[in-house]
Image (cartoon, rainbow, N blue to C red; front, side, top):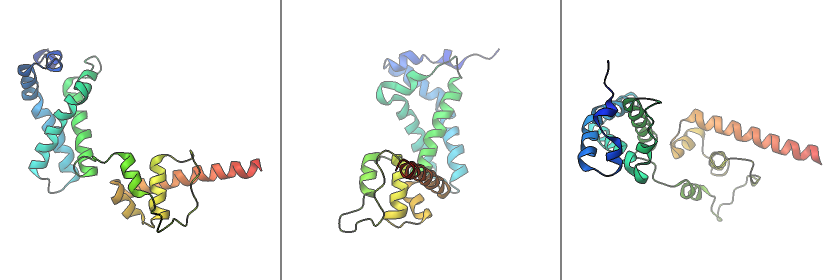
Length: 187
Protein backbone atom coordinates (compact mmCIF):
# COMPACT_ATOMS: atom_id res chain seq x y z
CA UNK A 1 0.00 0.00 0.00
CA UNK A 2 1.29 3.45 -0.93
CA UNK A 3 1.91 5.79 1.98
CA UNK A 4 0.36 9.22 1.77
CA UNK A 5 2.83 12.03 1.17
CA UNK A 6 0.64 14.29 3.30
CA UNK A 7 1.45 12.13 6.32
CA UNK A 8 5.17 12.82 5.91
CA UNK A 9 4.78 16.62 6.11
CA UNK A 10 2.44 18.43 8.49
CA UNK A 11 0.86 21.09 6.31
CA UNK A 12 -0.88 22.73 9.24
CA UNK A 13 2.48 23.30 10.94
CA UNK A 14 3.75 24.89 7.73
CA UNK A 15 0.75 27.22 7.67
CA UNK A 16 1.30 28.03 11.35
CA UNK A 17 4.84 29.16 10.50
CA UNK A 18 6.93 26.25 11.81
CA UNK A 19 10.27 26.66 10.00
CA UNK A 20 11.28 23.01 10.36
CA UNK A 21 7.98 21.82 8.86
CA UNK A 22 8.24 24.32 6.01
CA UNK A 23 11.81 23.25 5.23
CA UNK A 24 10.67 19.61 5.24
CA UNK A 25 7.78 20.50 2.92
CA UNK A 26 10.10 22.30 0.50
CA UNK A 27 12.67 19.48 0.58
CA UNK A 28 9.96 16.87 0.01
CA UNK A 29 8.16 18.60 -2.86
CA UNK A 30 10.91 20.63 -4.57
CA UNK A 31 11.62 17.84 -7.10
CA UNK A 32 7.91 17.61 -7.98
CA UNK A 33 7.54 21.35 -8.47
CA UNK A 34 10.82 21.61 -10.38
CA UNK A 35 9.80 18.78 -12.73
CA UNK A 36 6.41 20.38 -13.43
CA UNK A 37 7.95 23.77 -14.15
CA UNK A 38 10.74 22.32 -16.27
CA UNK A 39 8.36 20.27 -18.41
CA UNK A 40 6.18 23.29 -19.28
CA UNK A 41 9.03 25.72 -19.91
CA UNK A 42 11.03 23.29 -22.03
CA UNK A 43 7.95 22.44 -24.10
CA UNK A 44 7.33 26.13 -24.86
CA UNK A 45 10.84 27.63 -24.96
CA UNK A 46 13.40 25.79 -27.08
CA UNK A 47 16.50 27.04 -25.28
CA UNK A 48 15.18 27.20 -21.74
CA UNK A 49 17.47 28.90 -19.26
CA UNK A 50 18.06 26.71 -16.16
CA UNK A 51 18.06 29.86 -14.00
CA UNK A 52 14.56 30.70 -15.24
CA UNK A 53 13.38 27.21 -14.30
CA UNK A 54 14.83 27.64 -10.80
CA UNK A 55 13.30 31.11 -10.47
CA UNK A 56 9.87 29.92 -11.53
CA UNK A 57 10.17 26.96 -9.15
CA UNK A 58 10.93 29.39 -6.34
CA UNK A 59 7.92 31.48 -7.36
CA UNK A 60 5.67 28.43 -7.01
CA UNK A 61 6.61 28.28 -3.34
CA UNK A 62 6.14 32.04 -3.05
CA UNK A 63 2.64 31.63 -4.47
CA UNK A 64 1.95 28.96 -1.86
CA UNK A 65 2.75 31.33 1.02
CA UNK A 66 1.25 34.53 -0.44
CA UNK A 67 -1.84 35.94 1.21
CA UNK A 68 -1.35 33.98 4.42
CA UNK A 69 -0.76 30.60 2.72
CA UNK A 70 -3.96 30.93 0.69
CA UNK A 71 -3.11 28.24 -1.88
CA UNK A 72 -1.76 25.85 0.71
CA UNK A 73 -4.89 26.31 2.82
CA UNK A 74 -7.05 25.48 -0.21
CA UNK A 75 -5.47 22.04 -0.58
CA UNK A 76 -8.02 19.27 -0.05
CA UNK A 77 -6.55 15.78 0.38
CA UNK A 78 -9.91 14.19 -0.49
CA UNK A 79 -9.78 15.71 -4.00
CA UNK A 80 -6.20 14.95 -5.04
CA UNK A 81 -2.75 14.16 -3.75
CA UNK A 82 -0.32 16.90 -2.79
CA UNK A 83 1.87 15.89 -5.76
CA UNK A 84 -1.03 16.48 -8.17
CA UNK A 85 -1.98 19.75 -6.49
CA UNK A 86 1.56 21.12 -6.60
CA UNK A 87 2.05 19.95 -10.18
CA UNK A 88 -1.04 21.91 -11.25
CA UNK A 89 0.21 25.04 -9.47
CA UNK A 90 3.71 24.55 -10.92
CA UNK A 91 2.37 24.23 -14.46
CA UNK A 92 0.13 27.26 -14.04
CA UNK A 93 3.01 29.35 -12.71
CA UNK A 94 5.28 28.19 -15.53
CA UNK A 95 2.63 29.04 -18.14
CA UNK A 96 2.35 32.52 -16.64
CA UNK A 97 6.10 32.86 -17.03
CA UNK A 98 5.99 31.70 -20.65
CA UNK A 99 3.07 34.00 -21.53
CA UNK A 100 4.12 37.16 -19.75
CA UNK A 101 7.88 36.98 -19.45
CA UNK A 102 8.44 37.09 -15.76
CA UNK A 103 5.01 37.37 -14.24
CA UNK A 104 2.75 40.10 -15.46
CA UNK A 105 3.13 42.52 -12.60
CA UNK A 106 1.17 45.31 -14.28
CA UNK A 107 -2.34 45.47 -12.83
CA UNK A 108 -5.06 45.23 -15.47
CA UNK A 109 -6.27 48.75 -14.63
CA UNK A 110 -2.82 50.20 -15.29
CA UNK A 111 -2.44 48.19 -18.49
CA UNK A 112 -5.84 49.37 -19.73
CA UNK A 113 -4.90 52.96 -18.94
CA UNK A 114 -1.84 52.60 -21.17
CA UNK A 115 -4.04 51.44 -24.04
CA UNK A 116 -6.34 54.44 -23.90
CA UNK A 117 -6.03 56.78 -26.84
CA UNK A 118 -4.33 60.07 -26.06
CA UNK A 119 -6.24 63.29 -26.64
CA UNK A 120 -3.76 64.45 -29.32
CA UNK A 121 -4.61 61.47 -31.54
CA UNK A 122 -8.31 60.80 -31.06
CA UNK A 123 -9.67 57.44 -32.13
CA UNK A 124 -11.65 57.69 -35.33
CA UNK A 125 -13.66 54.66 -34.26
CA UNK A 126 -16.94 55.35 -32.43
CA UNK A 127 -16.98 54.93 -28.68
CA UNK A 128 -17.87 51.41 -27.61
CA UNK A 129 -21.17 51.18 -25.74
CA UNK A 130 -20.89 50.93 -21.96
CA UNK A 131 -21.32 47.45 -20.48
CA UNK A 132 -21.49 45.54 -23.77
CA UNK A 133 -17.88 44.38 -24.03
CA UNK A 134 -15.65 42.83 -21.39
CA UNK A 135 -12.46 44.66 -20.40
CA UNK A 136 -10.38 42.20 -22.40
CA UNK A 137 -12.57 42.67 -25.48
CA UNK A 138 -12.30 46.46 -25.10
CA UNK A 139 -8.51 46.22 -24.94
CA UNK A 140 -8.37 44.10 -28.10
CA UNK A 141 -10.79 46.36 -29.98
CA UNK A 142 -8.87 49.50 -28.94
CA UNK A 143 -5.59 48.00 -30.07
CA UNK A 144 -6.98 46.80 -33.39
CA UNK A 145 -9.22 49.72 -34.31
CA UNK A 146 -7.94 52.74 -32.38
CA UNK A 147 -4.22 52.06 -32.30
CA UNK A 148 -4.29 50.35 -35.71
CA UNK A 149 -2.36 47.29 -34.51
CA UNK A 150 -2.45 44.16 -36.59
CA UNK A 151 -3.39 40.88 -34.90
CA UNK A 152 0.19 39.79 -34.21
CA UNK A 153 1.12 43.18 -32.72
CA UNK A 154 -1.94 43.08 -30.45
CA UNK A 155 -1.06 39.52 -29.42
CA UNK A 156 2.48 40.60 -28.52
CA UNK A 157 1.22 43.63 -26.60
CA UNK A 158 -1.19 41.50 -24.55
CA UNK A 159 1.09 38.49 -24.18
CA UNK A 160 -1.39 36.09 -25.79
CA UNK A 161 -1.55 34.11 -29.02
CA UNK A 162 -2.72 35.67 -32.27
CA UNK A 163 -5.57 33.17 -32.50
CA UNK A 164 -6.79 34.30 -29.08
CA UNK A 165 -6.84 37.91 -30.33
CA UNK A 166 -8.88 36.82 -33.36
CA UNK A 167 -11.29 34.92 -31.14
CA UNK A 168 -11.72 37.84 -28.73
CA UNK A 169 -12.30 40.20 -31.68
CA UNK A 170 -14.94 37.85 -33.11
CA UNK A 171 -16.71 37.64 -29.73
CA UNK A 172 -16.62 41.44 -29.35
CA UNK A 173 -18.01 42.01 -32.83
CA UNK A 174 -20.81 39.50 -32.17
CA UNK A 175 -21.72 41.32 -28.96
CA UNK A 176 -21.71 44.67 -30.75
CA UNK A 177 -23.88 43.30 -33.57
CA UNK A 178 -26.34 41.92 -31.01
CA UNK A 179 -26.34 45.21 -29.09
CA UNK A 180 -26.89 47.43 -32.12
CA UNK A 181 -29.37 44.98 -33.64
CA UNK A 182 -31.51 45.22 -30.49
CA UNK A 183 -31.29 49.04 -30.56
CA UNK A 184 -32.44 49.18 -34.19
CA UNK A 185 -35.34 46.78 -33.51
CA UNK A 186 -36.42 48.83 -30.48
CA UNK A 187 -36.60 52.05 -32.54
